[in-house]
Amino acid sequence: MAQPCSICQHEKRAEIDRAIQDGSTLASISADFGVSYSALRRHRKHIKDIVQRAAAKKERDLAKECLGWLDEAHDIARRGALMAEEDHKPGVMVQYAASTAALVSKVLEITDYRELKKEVEELKAQLRGV
Image 1: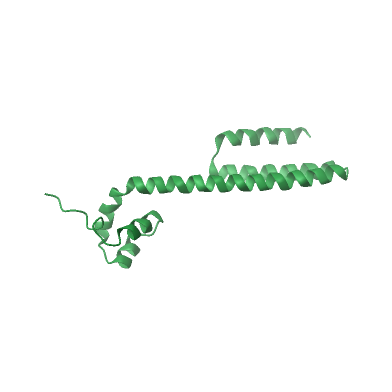
Image 2: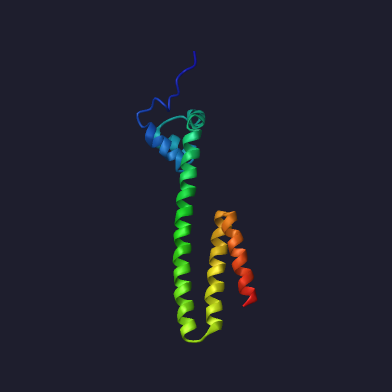
C-alpha cells in the first residue's frame, strides 16, 4: 500500500500550498516548514489543479487591472483632446490620441488580448489618416 503524502498530512499544509502557489522555491519551502524537498515535489503534483486555478485567477485579476488602466488612460486622453479641441490645437489632439494608442498597444502586448489588439490597430490606422 502506498504511503500517504506527508505534505497532505502536514499541520501547515494550507500555508505550504499557498507558498507553492505564490511561486516560492521548493528549497525555501522545505527550509521554512522542515519538510523534505522530494516530498514537496511529489505534493506539488497533487495540487497542480489548484495552482493552475490560482494562476488563472491572477491572470484574470491582471486583466481587470489592465482594463482599469485603459479606462483611466482613455478618460485622460479624452479630456485632453477636448481641451485641445476647445483651444483649436488639432496637433495636440493627435498627440493625446497617439499616446493613448501607444499605451493601449503596450498593455495589449503584455496581456495578449487579440480582439482588443484589432481595435487598437484600427485606431492606429485612423490616426495615420488624420
